[in-house]
Length: 375
Image (cartoon, rainbow, N blue to C red; front, side, top):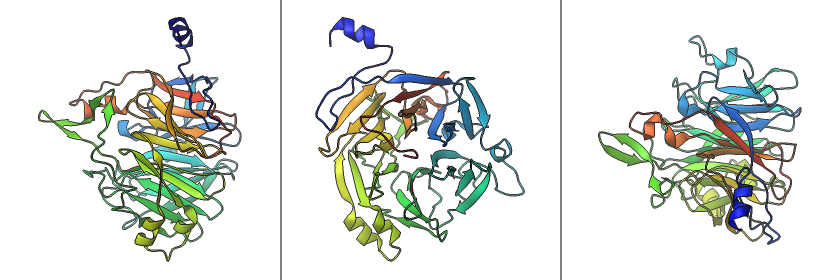
């Protein structure tokens, strides 16, 4: 691309390359929204309403909200009461990052419970009836004191939700990261694949932001952060669950039918895990109907891509404004949406000084193949 073309393309940003057909098409990465608070994950309801989590890293007052792109307004979701902590019970949203929608109009919100030290839970809100659908608690031993239940995938066919636990809360170093399986038919929850290489962070791949190491600063020293199981998604046929640690160079997959078998041991599950492809340190993970994977590269302001069936990694888009791209999810309007959360600019990583700046962005792009609502 010559200099003139680069300047002309700057407003929308760069190249998409390496799709399943082997072509190198140019696809625009668009700036969709500018907000006053950092966005974690995004879901879309059947009527096209955008539901987002304000990133819990920054302790927002409004944990989950809807966003009106026309009016550019944010409204607490499902209402203000659910975003307001109380002492008498835990029927409120405490610390939410992962949100997903299902085919029945239910928005599922994963409350990590780390802010006020309450039991983690899934809160399901029926957007068609505008009322609470269900609460499922995730107590010990399915969750641990160091659990940070980050993101999840919904298998409506088998009535399962599978959660990625990063293992970095309350001093956790990622070494006890795992998957948590929730049986929606019985309410049973169980912890699997802890101590397995597919959920653990790779200590040889520290988080680098533009080549500089990221860690928690204290007393003039920096402690690197290693994040375990993070990105997670399910293919169109509800056959393969894809997942990976944030810090690591591989994406893994597992037949989700194996997770539905409660009699299967952890060792048996581990034997069924396949190494699928290479990657870089990533946050969110999504998939299209052709099995192409898309993920947010936290250290390089970019979107990564693994083509199917070649299983070849490439960087397909970047924008300097996309600081710490995090959640990635599909809407029925044909776009995938990406939040830019500026996590690395928070005070915890900068000696107590908050270096974030407004606005916080949401970007979008059209994937190579149609995606799926809720992925």
